[in-house]
Image 1 (cartoon, rainbow, N blue to C red):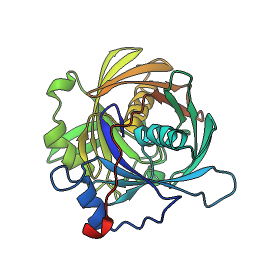
Image 2: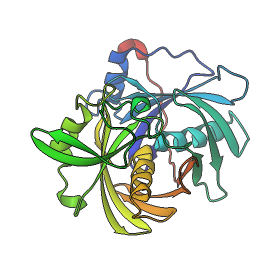
Image 3: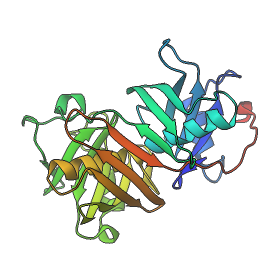
Length: 273
């Protein structure tokens, strides 16, 4: 499946037992020797009683992560298309907490991504400063100004003049693994077109640059709003397509709306991996 080109291998872990090792996930994600994807998603039964499902996300490097907005939309379409639920509104457990998914009449999916977190220790982000709108980050002796926040996973967002010239491939890995981020970070590059539109590229933690990043789009809009540069409803143009993000302000949840698509279905013998 994919959400604007951010692609996933999705497993039904409810009707069958799925135990994936880091090596198996890396093999599945390999675009030459496996199936190929940015992330592997597991659709599982909930641990608690308040949710309908449990949602587990593994990056291409095999590490489990907290949240993925594009994957959440694919999750919603998967459980509906597979007959695992007939609900339009679905409650799902993630490592980042419980999220709410809503399938729209036009088959777009809206995700309540929860309220952004700015406290550095909760991101986590090592800094001597208290909560700030932006922070200086030293990248090989050069200061870079970034907004730092968590959308269930950590993000460092910077504003650039021209997204096409942004150093995503060269600087992105350095930000991802910067010592200030103990759990690494997603590096976002945002070009503000006007108060209702931005362009965005994201170097994702454990994956590299992807065609779309849902939590990255949320983080970028929040960062722009915090700096007084964006309105509450913003269209985010990513390399793979457009997402709609809405955030009314501190303490309020971020709403993400976009498509999700199935590409193909198949079977694989995990014993061969």
